[in-house]
Image (tube, rainbow, N blue to C red; front, side):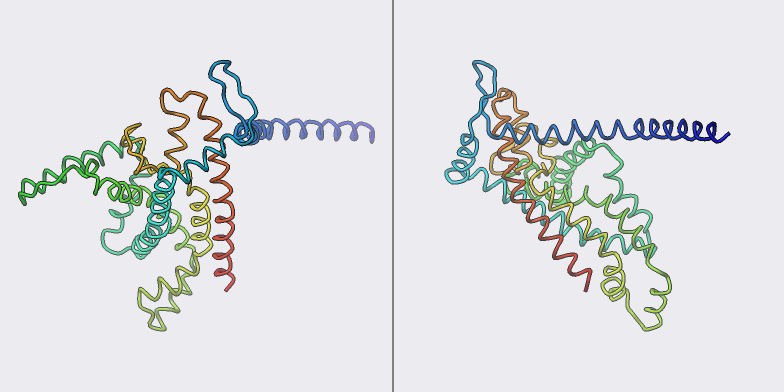
Length: 306
């Protein structure tokens, strides 16, 4: 009898082990291929060059980083791209985040038209990105100039064509499309604040702006910290939807680092010859973004502890 029970237990243990292996095999395979292998291959390619005649990659430890240094010191392309990436990050991650918290608080308080604002601000997260770009291009290039011409007899260039209005319009679009996910998370975090705390504040005569900055924001600070840290990590990968708006027809002065990396490997004619330089540039960006991410995390977590 004891032998039979022992055999059944072993069979059950083996069955559970097989089930566990089947359960984790696909995720582990995905991580191994699309994360470990891809990143190791990218790291190796940064120390290689591509021979267009033989069609083979050859080892060259300094060529790609030498090109990066030349572009950095003898051309304004990388500096313009870095500045544009930094501006978009500041506007989206800081200014846009402040607006998202304010809108979330408005919706949280269920003030007038709160459901309309929730729908309007969350809409970009629901619709396909290319559809948003098409609609936004129509408003920026045709609707707004046409409105000003018809009602105010003021002639202006399409916003996405004029050199002075192109990037500010792109900045506005990126702030707008970043609201949806943030508002959903922030309103959820605000709903978790204990009602007793809010009621105690009302008894003490706390005004709405004091409630927001002295009670709500400190209570949801871990959520804000998570968004901020994640945004720093994407500083050099954000294309700012430039390819969706203009394809390959973007002036160098309007590049972001993310768009430049994408163009290096995507532009017709480049082929594999730019893979190695894109890999090297990606490593340099990682070396810059990694300590920045840790620094921002350290600063924000320090505020949480206080």
